Length: 222
Ligand code: 5GP
Image (cartoon, rainbow, N blue to C red; front, side):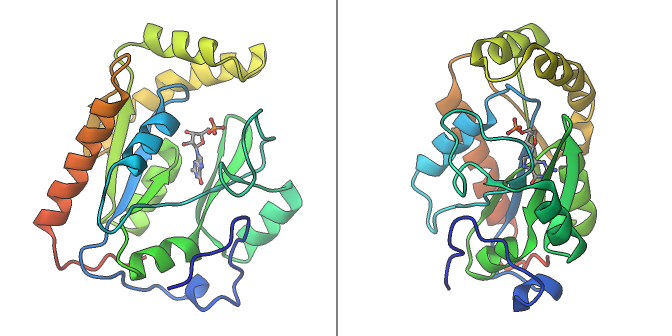
């Protein structure tokens, strides 16, 4: 099983791009969503740092937004120009795509298939629209929603992060309430309490383990 090199999005010539395929028995497609600023990146880093056998496969998704300071192409995201993104989308290279906070984001389909076929639990960090799209395409996907202890705490964290312009920050704050209203679409809701990243990661790990134990032989088709 070969891994995709960073920065590569499989094209339709990739045999795994076009045809639905079944993953290895037990391998899960896990979606982690939550409003901007809730701490998804830190939680997923903590989750990935925990020993899992086999290790989780985190999918580096594609975006048309500019890289923030410290973000690395192929590691944080695959940063794409809109033209390239549109061409890949039109070629069917994405499992789902959505416009979020004014930028385009998408999940590379072939990478998800390849990781599931290799028996890895796949982690997707995508927004509420992406989660709904994945659930309708892949009913066996496990949807986890991370929420802040309160809206005030969320806004405080977003402001402290200081990675957005005032206008972008306002848009993300407005969208947070809309996103939080979608919690009912998810299989599990986990509160990320202030300063409790490890605990949140542990709870998500326990949810994944329990799901694996419930369906040891199920093959998730993507
Ligand atoms: P950010 O710009 O803060 O990195 O991400 C904004 C939102 O886009 C977050 O909710 C993040 O989870 C979501 N996102 C990242 N990648 C994808 C993707 O491939 N598809 C969708 N639908 N949302 C994504």
